Image 1 (cartoon, helix red, strand yellow):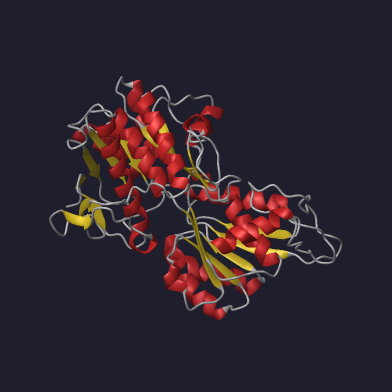
Image 2: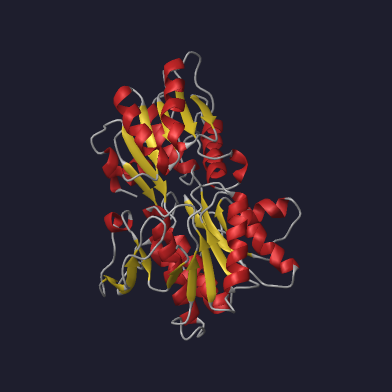
Length: 435
């Protein structure tokens, strides 16, 4: 979190900013995890102005993945602040985003538009120029793409740290030394998550003294699905990883529970296959339905609520600034510094991004301790998985290798945001199944 954003949240929480709403409406709370000294306004005073915001979803709310997580965040903030009029439209194809959003803006005035998919980038570029009085917020797009548009901010709940921790768990539990990954697309966002997962797998196997000290692990990455929401294809890809390549842990970027459900079905056949939560708490979702998943190892979860709250409260208060919000471990939490392992909240809700429930039956105690240690260290930047030396090979958009593996990150060098947001190479232990 930037110092500007952190300072604003501190002022917000202490009541110093005040943030008068309409005529004398009191104080607003800060981010969800902050502790305000005054009560947030639930309903605006009579005649107070409203703020209208529109969310554009690429998938269905019922996906229980990416879109559901964004919708939960939208519902949280709209339920908390009576001055907010929040609307949404789901299942918007990326090539239709411009027309869909334009139709809304032509019929009604919106103060804010949240575009929640990387593929909405071109549409937002065009619309921001056409509607300069509307503030646009683009999720997962690099801020550099919008640097000349004063009414466009970018935001993201970053997962590469969590994917590394998932990899630690995968490397610790694999019995075949073969794990897999099903990607939706191979844009930099997904590639850095795959690489972080691979780095974790190697470290997890090394920690447990298996798979030749980590050198013998094989990480199979399928061809991209070419869709963020493709449950049947995702399930088929997962099944192929298990049946054809003997994979026993599968990570994924696809906005449904299909891969996790596929892994669970193998347990019914007497075969241990593990997978993860993705964006939403899929373990909790099935538990509420009366099903205790044996296949759920842990996972990456986003809580968009505090991010939306932070952005909208600033906009309503007249404090909008163009910015890039890149929420990682330790952001939007009361205490962002590392805790002792025994006090770690790894595996529990904490901040904008957090680790899903840890399967303590499957993950060895030694690995659980390491997961918690790394989780806490990453809050303070004391550890980062993308620290060299790291070898890898460049890929194209299908995942096809473009070169032999070579040194990508020199020893002692840590990749920064710019490199991670443009990453186009696979870790050397990844076996691409692209033809």
